[in-house]
Length: 188
Image 1: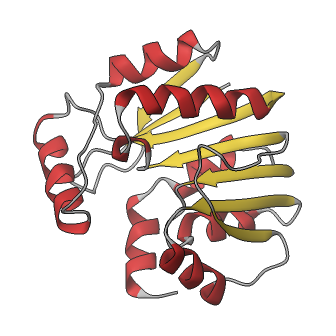
Image 2: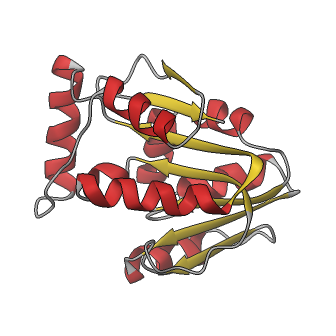
């Protein structure tokens, strides 16, 4: 695992994400990038089939080259048209803020349709109202994705949105040492 992958997984609440997800069954990570989180979640539980999806061919190729375990798959695909199957879990980690607000809702509704009855939706996102932490995250996004328009929501907006889809939601800041905004939403 390269230094970027190690840092990325250190700043994410990976252990908490793992504990929130079902120990077995199909789990999608939408917007998986280079696959570091998908890999970690597949390694934690060998009965969990993790499928990482990203539209960026180079990132998917990097993930496929770096991580080769039997319960992990990477697919180059547009998340809006990918042919999902019924699943036990879905993760969006720092992905939704890269798509317009209306499309966030469309994608959440789409994936909600494929979640089994006791499935879990995990969202790690930036809180628009998180003061300096939000601004530090915005700098990070600008450096990594200078051409992207960013669509942050407040914690209250995220909670309201997922509750309108029928989820009950808990939200906590699990990574306190990292100066960016790192809120984790567990939706069931």
